[in-house]
Image 1 (cartoon, one colour):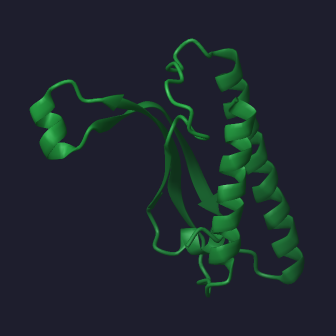
Image 2: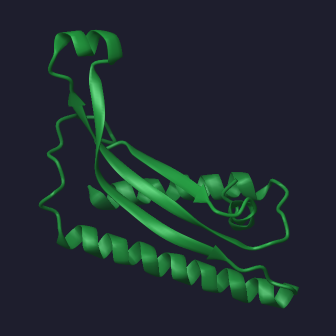
Image 3: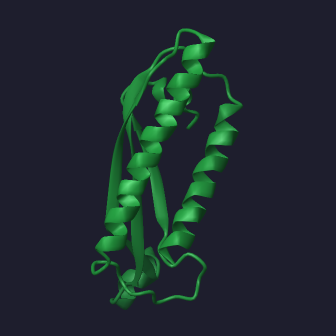
Length: 139
């Protein structure tokens, strides 16, 4: 189940990167954070709360934040090296997260729905520099 969700998340990130890569990119590096939050849907208990603010609430049960620094290559040959280094660093970080999640499963809430994705997730980009996300191809 975790592998299926990880593959879906990777596809979504790749689709977002491909879409945003088509936009014009600025010429400076930057720093920021990418966070992924996983939520559990819980039904609100009080009928009056359900009536006015919806039947379900989403409670975050896990959050991962990755600090990102984007380097700006000066030449085309540097660009390939920088891209390869960024890919390797991101892959290493993602594998560390997957390893940690696979060894510590006792905090994962029970699956109470038959939906294809029982745990909604949200990807947030907190940019400290207006251009770093564009350089990574996130926007």
